[in-house]
Image (cartoon, rainbow, N blue to C red):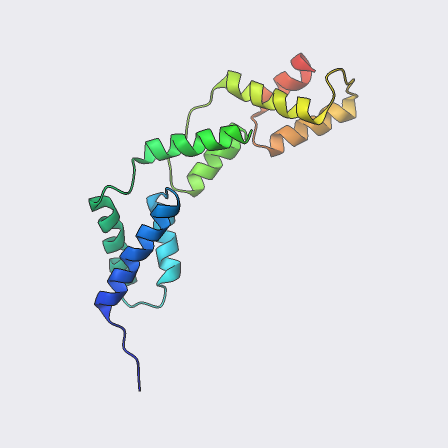
Length: 154
């Protein structure tokens, strides 16, 4: 007894999956496409199925403006003290546009990370400054911000 798939039920399942994903959190169109392709990878008309589900979300205004979504995600990452390189790379992976950097905010975040890690009156040796610089770079801060923290603020 071979079990044939009902294309109508499959389309409904794809639409339901889009609703479930968007109910949990905002997703970019690229994220939705990736997740739907993974979920329905064994379907014959995968491209049409994914396009139809994405169009369903767009018709219901569930997919927000990519620029707005990028700014909201960037704000979330700013609160986690991530650097601008990290943030823009994260947005690129999600298929969203990059955001502009605010130099003062970047400097403030980098300083707060260093102050959380070390005492206020800590004397940094040359090796320790290099270690702090590598740490900030790994958090996604640009070289100008790292330089300012190391040579002007410490």
